Length: 308
Image (cartoon, rainbow, N blue to C red; front, side):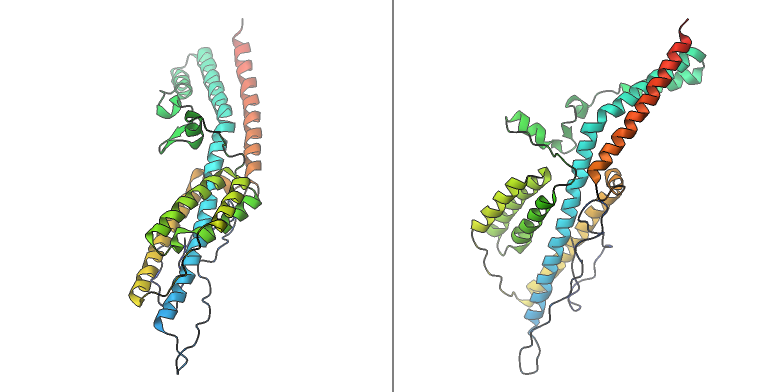
């Protein structure tokens, strides 16, 4: 998610830096423009070779980008978990409110006979009984990108382990960050190593999305016992410049993703409770229960008025 300035060797970033998060609504945790380490002086005039200066710039840019990616991914997990838990826990309450609103509108229309009240009652009932689509037929187990992991697990007789909380525990977050910093694909120096890291990080992301501390520890041990990455060696100046350009483009794309997450409906809701998003679900549930009680009382009163 970010490229640092490297003594005028890096292209200008094309998008405004989104605030990186350690959690929903929190301030940025990774500095998008870290300080460059001092250049070692070489040669008779105390000047560093151009390749050395570019190497330092690329290394700093890589680390800053990884930190930015970590922040966006942790926030993405919170948004996804909040959305899913919101649907699972509060969906029935929203359905009950729709049903009560339709009943109230129908009772009012029956009492008044007003065409406008009848129209409103029809609209309210239509919201309760929409034409079923693919997602409804799968009862919330599918979205535009396909079946949820829980549904896949059920269909393949695998254990179902949906997220238990909006935000994974602090220990899970710590393990996740450590693993990404060590195994990030951008640190690979050849295609085979990149493929190995891509597959490993995909497993890390899945474990983190579920908040599975035990699996994250196992993955940490697995990585520690795996092949040692080859030591990075300075590349030619042209390759280093190309690397900086790629990092800048990657950062721009991630900045867009972060912005979309922050501006989404769920992202906006998470901003209301940056320190305890799980508690926010409980508060919304309490508000919905209160609304259900009010609607039930109103419907009961309307029905009583119509009883001879």
